Image (cartoon, rainbow, N blue to C red):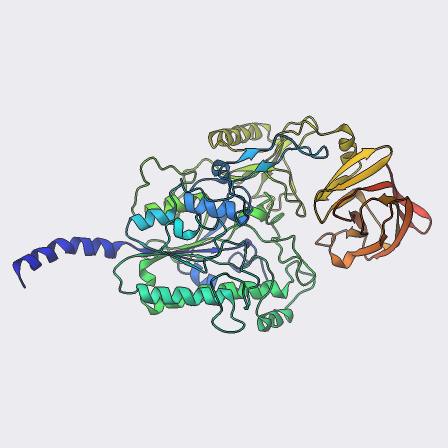
Length: 615
């Protein structure tokens, strides 16, 4: 060996040792997987997740992990930037649409039936933020993204955000067309008929790991699973397997969703198997998280996809069912295997935590809204004041909330509903989650001092983050307040107004609907709906009803169609049979052009009017 080669080798040894000391990172993010959707927390009898249990046995399971938003794209942005959606303005999952908007704004006006003005959300991950992938790539990491992205197409795709590889390079909110091939990805085709996209992502990751083995460079794999987001389909064999296991009295009773959870879990196991086989597991940090709570508003197998019980609400809602998620962190030799932790953590914590785990500093002038949870991973307590969720929109999902924000301190949660009181002030609701995990016991009046302090901290956060949230609509009309006081609400794609003793429904989209509810249920049985109506819109009307204790509301097994509407007044009588006491109705007029005018509505048993509305 020549002297020069010897000197070069001596000087390179520290570099090689430094590279070898850098652990790999595997970040697995499930889509719409709720806190009660795995076997990690003892809340399900239906779903089977042995591979997640296997993962948890290698590291720490967090009992109280949260997302900064109850919807996917905002949470995804918070993971990659360490910044809260309240700060970035990316608060809706509209990143697959054509509009590019990088600054959140408040709309100046709204329809007269709307109490609040709407927000124009950011629709792309702004390139001005240094992403986790960009930071790790600058430190010599090979970076690869597999699965869902939903933060924008080119020039906002993973390839422009620090990833060397992006498979299947898709910007949509779910898998293209279906989980089971044939797919509709633009440039990505199935390897065999009937291939499942999650199986394919697992296979692609295994191939990537095999290629990285022995490369001498650490890797960051961002495995953002498509599962268990809509569309709701799965392998037929797994659906039939779980169909035999259904308990019809359990709110988790969709065999299709159970099959989707199983495939999600199987592919976590596939990646773990590859890490073990390639002797990479001991050198790899693994983080498992979900982007929001479980979906409780779509329909599959005649029910909702899942239930987040005992948590209240679900995806699209600031109740805990929408923001509390499963979380596991594995760090071989550093985090105690099989540990559980009760510290509050949130999605903005993950970026600063990873940097500290890798012994990396933030970039100059880089700040985070989260904190490193390394003390918790080491078995200690986190020194933090609060975490926050923010959702300045209303999705009209079941058990919905108005636009809102929330602050968590210890066991306490304070919800702020923007401008929700009659005088236009914010409504504040306080919950002790340790005593009432389901958020049905509101205790603000019993703890005025705590409400004052928590609300002040929340105000400070919203101000410091320059959060954009709705303001009162100056055009909100008094008669529309009367509509609300009568129990009527515009559901989707329409506005309501009172005029000359009639209720007018003006469509703003293709699928308008309005609903009405009442506090005391009406006994079921053979009933009749009578309506005096006329319409300049062409089409038929549908009637749906809600039954006490039966979820979801207004689904297809509880609806009837009426006759076609006419431009002259007509009285329609629509019989229906309810199995249980009824608590509300939904009325679907024709979409498109023209208004539907209602003069009087009644619910009858025989000839007796049980409820009546005259406008």
